[in-house]
Image 1 (cartoon, rainbow, N blue to C red):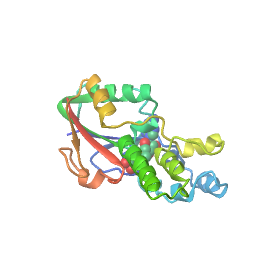
Image 2 (cartoon, rainbow, N blue to C red; image 1 turned 45 degrees about the vertical axis):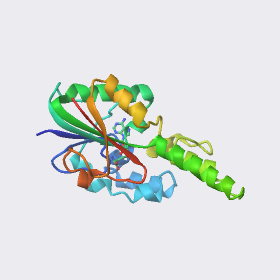
Image 3 (tube, helix red, strand yellow; image 1 turned 90 degrees about the vertical axis):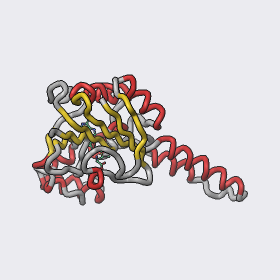
Length: 219
Ligand SMILES: C[S@@+](CC[C@H](N)C(=O)[O-])C[C@H]1O[C@@H](n2cnc3c(N)ncnc32)[C@H](O)[C@@H]1O
């Protein structure tokens, strides 16, 4: 059985084909350069502490904005968590078309994203609660919202930092993502929960329950 984890990061299991093109993963092969970038503050402590060296041998380095290197209808399961929002809308759509191409008939796609609807609802709730309590001192609500979206820049950011800390390029809610999956040919698109669904190993792979939307779709 063939299982793909697209944009796996370090969440890579042995019997999955884990695909990622992180510059951080490539850097794992050059520990000195990695340390230097950390010392020069180009790599945050959070990112420096991620132990890519332990995982790099399990990762196929591939840019998912390019054609997936698999035959038509050759894959049983595709899992992708918190990846598609790092691609622009057009590239994200092409990736889902590629997923449909390589998935076998009857195959299953589990797609997880940071949920735009959830973030927007939380932001509106915060504003409403603040207005109701007549407390207008919390002027950082919009900043927290923008931080959560991870699509905004406070200051001009050097290119090297952008490469090492990629931001979101597009975001989705369950409606837009369902429409996109449908347009790519997927059927039986259903909303699932954290660690619940028909995809194998989700008890090991799923993360970020507080911010994620979990969808499964069939071919
Ligand atoms: C936010 S992390 C998610 C990692 C993991 N899937 C998880 O849920 O924790 C996004 C991952 O997608 C990878 N990624 C982003 N753009 C990519 C691309 N064009 N091709 C392959 N991987 C990409 C990044 O390198 C990063 O490891």
